[in-house]
Amino acid sequence: MANKLNSQLFVSRLSSYTTNEHLKRLFSRFGVVTEARLVKDPRTQRPKGFGFVTYESEVEAQKALKAMNGRIVDGRLIFVEVAETEKPGEDATSK
Image (cartoon, rainbow, N blue to C red):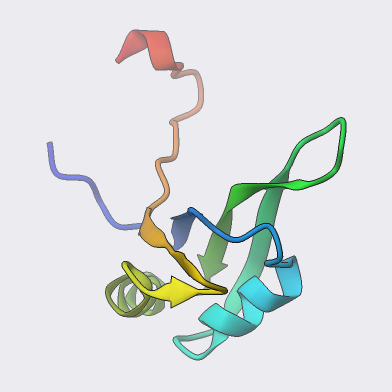
């Protein structure tokens, strides 16, 4: 089954110095970013090294994916891929 591209990207291997604002600025040159969110440890509130960037359109997300995957950002090699979204009512065990 082909995975349909959506407008949300998963960004991994980010530096602990990267902020939500920096992530948004970094990806804004490829289109309108509606959300840039780092995932943080709930106890320490420190970034876990990955996050999500959401665009207004799939075309913008595709441009950013091609341009940013495998780039060096803040001294780290980052990876960008399409974020996996689960359908309502579907969990990881049913796959």
